[in-house]
Image 1 (cartoon, helix red, strand yellow):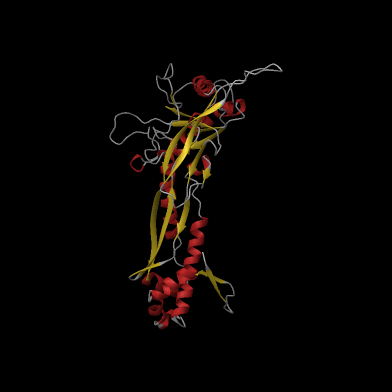
Image 2 (cartoon, rainbow, N blue to C red):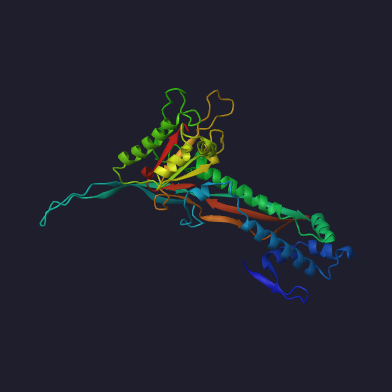
Length: 355
């Protein structure tokens, strides 16, 4: 953003966005504020500078704000390869084919390997919201000697990040966006078998040995399906299941089920994820539907953390536009452009339903 610097003997480094300054100045709001003796502004320009600085501070705080409860952008690689102006893009979903063999010195029958690719089209959608301050809120902030409330800007960022996270997990069929858990993304799905005693698939009900067997079956299925090509390094599981396995000891030992898995599968990182819980109806398509008699199912996902295999594509991250005048209010529009999940190698992941 273009910024101008105004030197002041009492505050020698007043930075503000020139576009915000001009929007405020042209709104006549600063002239109104400067006309009130209680505001203690020397001129309309001084009032415009003051509130432009306020907006710059709010925007900076909003950009810096992080929401650790949204896990999609931490669990999967995030890319920005698609131009922000694009409405759609083409990529290829690949499957490795062929094999190698031992050869003689003069062999001429070298086996051919290749990749089987299928062209796919992804789509980019804009999401947005806004926040603002009216003239009375500006008066009150000035009189109280306080800054404008930064929480409005943070709320705008929060809701865009919330929707981005939801689209990354679940996608949106109506807008042709694919998510990590979409039923049309090509990732294989493994359904767990019920436990012998519990007759349920949930790991909160199964015996420790049955849980360990489920993990082994998932790893074996991925290994067999891909002919030993894909080797996962991450296992995302519902946060409530993660907690339960952390506190549940294997019978006759002081070792928890989760510690046993971590100790014996050191190459695999186990991550808790609330969006995979059986009650996470917004992000988990297998969760219980409202009014449904069928209980929801927790979901696990086994995958390789590699942007060449799967990524969350965000052509344009969260952006705050210059202020706009709207009658007695100054409004800041915010937007982002997202494309959901881009899955180049669907077989590099496995969705496990029933946790």
